[in-house]
Image (cartoon, rainbow, N blue to C red; front, side):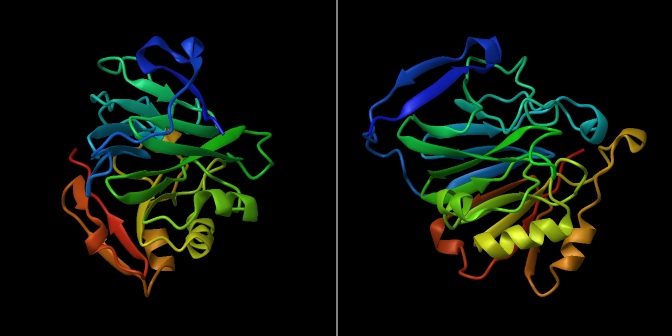
Length: 255
């Protein structure tokens, strides 16, 4: 079956997306081993591996993200979970990165991406609409970024998500993303090897305009799970240093 691919250029805005079909053949060397992960604040990460730079969920600096620098970094591909300002602000990104933003199967530079529709709230999507969780393999690592998932993972969604090597999981709550208990339940379902928490309160928050909780509530709930704390905003992951038992990895933003 051919894969239909909805892609646009991030810098040109969402309205210029176009439809195309790409070959399913992977170019040689596209999946060399190893992945670099850089946290740019909130649910935004830059993932580098397999010869590709992927930026996930660039945001506008407002509310819970007010104190973060705008994540306007160079990337080959940008993927967003929704068009909300905290995870879908693509204006002003350098260069002309390709953009994917809707559920479906995509392919870019030898990497297959699965966009999985989930509810962005606890009201069947009636409040904040659809959230797109992204699953793909890069640098030999199976990655799942849950974006702003707020509803429990269904059996059908679990099949599409598979078992991630690395899962980016929102933990801070609010009306549009998992709270600590919901994040724990998702982790139990997915059984990822490495969990990177996202969407939690930091010193970047505008106190009057941010309703999400800090990281400690989630970590306290996950007592008994190994936690690795990095004093850097970046880590390197290789297939060989992942364990079968889930480990939580936290990163430090360089304010």
